[in-house]
Length: 428
Ligand SMILES: NC(=O)c1ccc[n+]([C@@H]2O[C@H](COP(=O)([O-])OP(=O)(O)OC[C@H]3O[C@@H](n4cnc5c(N)ncnc54)[C@H](O)[C@@H]3O)[C@@H](O)[C@H]2O)c1
Ligand SMILES: N[C@@H](CCO)C(=O)O
Ligand code: NA
Image (cartoon, rainbow, N blue to C red):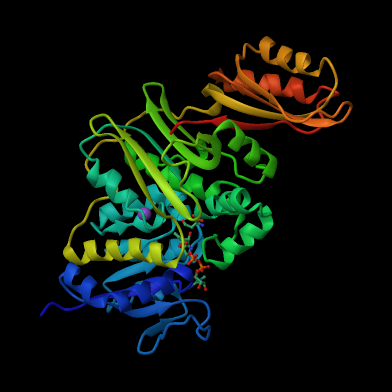
């Protein structure tokens, strides 16, 4: 009988413990699909005594995760420590250099040092698998690299952060405060160790950089991703979005044209009839556009122990089966440049708090007219002479640079009482 695949798990937090749990619960089905038993035999974490709700009896324990990678009894290393530097990187370097397969959930590390790790993996012909790193339980990496491999992919869009989607959904459905919803997402095991990575859009940007690299056959260029998070999204904008027929979602959008590759993460107004407008809570969505297949929409849970462990274990089964997809495949890299936001065009939602008095709207629309921006609609809610009222303007397709110029002028008007809220309107 074939020997079990011996797995070492480094990092026993939400995801690492989830992997142990799944492998135990579904041992039979996983073993059948892998063609051999998959058994965790060694682990490494910071605290040996913490109760994880799962027994570690009989497992070799390593305080040092690099020592775990070097254990000759370990066939595959699962890295679920996290962080783009430090022990996770050292562990992966050690394992790959020794030709040992690595499965990781670490998008931060891949987005920043992915090229280096992919090269190490290629040199030693060791699998480097990372389905769990993007969109949690959704098989997004497999879909892009394998399922859509016959297509030229022109655009990949997604709800890529479960924590942000959870917060925005809680704010809209239950009128909850941002901080309260975030704290719940943390309790549910969705958030990063440092949740600013979630709420400031950085985690979604890590995932988008990985998706864009795979979709467009081009090394990850994390610094080129334009990143805005959800801290500035207010309950008022969420309500006004509903009135206008939109939902606010934090999207990652990567598009590839002759001009180059544009990658951006920011809150968006998505038409409520679009399939991803109703993807709520911890669910993520990935929308890929291929030249032959057209649009493909994938939806599933993007964070949490179960969905993430599901992705890790699917990678382990591939490795057990000897199915090995190199990170980049055989294509030569495209040399397309990155296109920055200064070249972006799109439609915009602009919400102002203005003093309700004659002439204010004329000044605001004058600034937009001077910047060559065409208005699609205008909405003023309430009447409160001399007091602050919200005014919402939506534009037709406009240049980002022109929009910023107009906003600077509008923000400087006496009658405009708060910094204007700008949300891009997108149909993914
Ligand atoms: N939580 C999720 O839903 C989710 C989903 C997808 C990907 N991820 C990624 O998975 C990784 C782990 O996330 P998590 O949510 O499980 O985090 P976590 O904080 O719950 O777990 C990390 C674990 O690593 C351990 N650790 C830290 N330093 C260590 C060291 N030097 N040696 C050994 N162990 C060490 C910690 O003690 C902790 O148990 C991260 O890269 C994260 O981005 C998380
Ligand atoms: N913190 C991440 C985990 C999944 O990658 C999220 O909320 O989506
Ligand atoms: Na995934």
